[in-house]
Image (cartoon, rainbow, N blue to C red):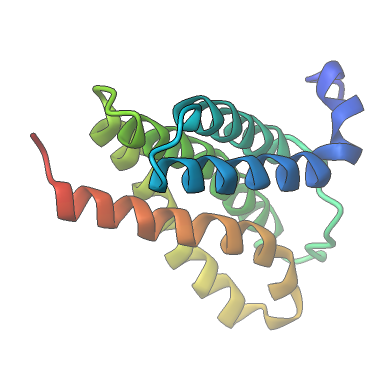
Amino acid sequence: MNQLPFAEKLFPFLNTLEKIFLTGFIIGACFRILHLNGADEFLMISMSGLAIVCFLTAYKPATEDFGNHSKALLMTIVNKMFYISSAVCILGLLFFLLHFKGYQQLLLIGSLPIGICTIIGVYLITQLSESAGALRPGLLRGLPLGIASAFVLYYFGWS
């Protein structure tokens, strides 16, 4: 399956790129807190890169073994939805931090699938405890972003 040939070359480096962009995000957040110049640029580059990495991770071939049970396809879809929704939430949080219009819509579009996938994922983990490790990476990336998005939507509301 050769859907994204340019991305296949990036798949081995996605974890490293994710760490680099997270470091850039932390630096940008520190610059923002200290009111230093360049904070918005750091945040824009690092969060956009992080969203791209999350999106490409959804297309990475599954290395986890979901087993030969009837819910293997559902686990694959849930795992991919976590990553795609995480990318949308990251862009929504970027729009919020930079005071762009449309952040509410992006956060809502990103956090609702994360909530739905969390419910389905918890159900799958309770039913298929031997395959629980396969959902862990997506869950650990998606759930904090979903919670942060829900907090921003609740606290700052629709304006």
